[in-house]
Image 1 (cartoon, one colour):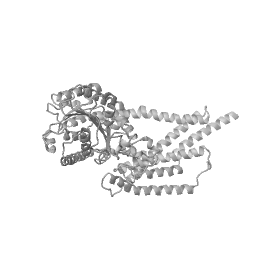
Image 2 (image 1 turned 90 degrees about the vertical axis):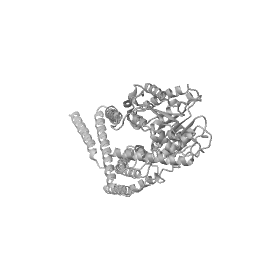
Image 3 (image 1 turned 135 degrees about the vertical axis):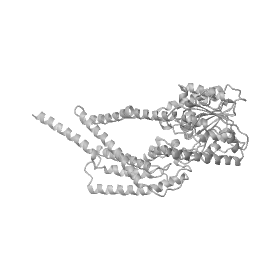
Image 4 (image 1 turned 135 degrees about the horizontal axis):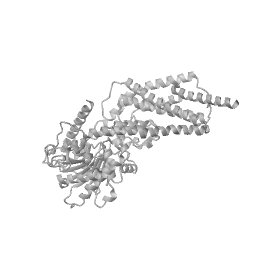
Length: 577
C-alpha cells in the first residue's frame, strides 16, 4: 500500500513539474533579464558603421534585447544554483513594478535618441541627415523580434524540462537535467542542418541558378570576332551566365576610352567562362585560356586575372579603371565558380571559389611564363570581396618567386583572408589597423579613400600588392574575437567611422553582423562600395602608370565616378521596381 501511495505521489509530482514547465511559457518576464536586455537594447541603437533602416534597427534591437535577457536569466539562475545570498525568495511586486517602468522609460528614451545616433553615422559617410523618425516601425519590429526569440527559447526550455523529467525516472536528477538539455540542443542542430538548412539551400541554389540563366530580352549576343560569346567564340553566349554576359557586353570601346584619354586607344579584351561552359573548374580554366589565346589576350600590354564575387559578378569600377589608364591595351579573364551570392558561397561552398581561382591562375600563369619575357604582357591579379579572398589564396608565393606576376589589386578583402589578416596583425607599430604599413612597403601596401600612407615615390619590389579597403567596411574588419574586447580599428578610428561609435560587449558584434549585411547599401566610396576614382589611384601604383597628367587624371576620376553613381542609382531603381 505504501509503495502504491509513493508511486502515485511520484506520478503526481512529475505531472505537476510538467505542468509547471508548460506554465513557464506564459510566465512573467525576469527582472534581471529585463535590466540587462534593456541595456543591450539601448547599446544596439548607438552608432556603428552603416546607417540602418527602421525595420533593420528594430530587428537588431529586439535581437539584442533577447540576448541581454537570456544573459540576465542565466546569471539569475547561476546565482541561485551557487546558493549565494539572497538565493531564495521572491522579488517584491513594488520593486518589479519600479524595474518595469524604469526599463520602459529607458527604452523610450533610446527610441527618441536612435535617429540622432544614426545621423552621426550618416554624417561620417557624407550622407544627408534624416529629419523624420519612424519610431513606431522600430518599436514594432523590436517587439516582434524579441517575442519570436522569447517564444522559441521558452518552447525549447519546456521540451528540455519534459525530457529531463522523463529521464529522471531512471537516472539521477542532475544527470537527467544535463541529458535533457543536451537532447534538445542535438535536436535543434540536427533539425537545422539536416532539414531546414537543406531545404533552404535547395531553394536558394535553384533561385540563383534560374536567375543566372536568365537572358534579358534586350541583350543580344555580340557580333565582334574578338568578343567572348560571339559567333567565333569558344564559349557560347548562353553559357556565360548572367554576370558573364554583363561583364563581356559592358566593356568600353576604343572611342569611349579615347574620348577621355585624349589619345588613340584600343578596345580592351574581356574573356569570361561561366559555370555552364564546362563540367569542372580545370576544364573551364582551360577553356578560358584557349579563348584568351584566340582573341589575342597575350599580345596586349597587360593581362588581368579576375576572381569574381560569389555570383560571378565583376565590379566594373575595378576593371574599367585600368582599361582607361592603359588606353585599352588590356586583356582580362574571369571565371564563375558559383551561382550563390558571396555570403552564401562563403558559408556553403568556400572550397569552390578557391579551387576555381587556383585552376584559372595555374592555367593562365602556366602559359604566360612560357612566353618570352620581352613579348608577354604584364600580369596582374584582381578581386573584390570574396573574389579578393580567393584570388589571394590562388597565389602561392613560393611557386612564383622565380618569375612572379607584376602585381595584384585586392579590394574589400573579407575578414577570412589569411594573408591580409596576417599582414594586418604584423603591421608596423603605430600604424592603424584600418590602414596598416607593412615593413618598408616594397611588397604590399594598403590604401583607402585618402590614398596610401606610403609615399607614391617609395620604391617597389618586383611584385606590387595593394589592398584597397575602407574603415567603414564591416566585411573586412569583422572579427568574432571582438565579442568581449574592443577591436584595434577603433583606436584610432578611420575617417569614415563616426566619432560617437563605442564598443559594447556582445552588442557591437551583433551590430557589425548587420553592418556586413548592409555594407553594399553604403554610398559609393564607403562601406563595401568602391569608387572608380579610388581604383584609378590604386591601379596607378600597382601598374606603375605615370603617363597621365594630373588634370586628365582628375577628369577621368570624376567622369568614372559620375557614371558609376548613375549605374548604381539605375540598378537600385530597377531593383525597387
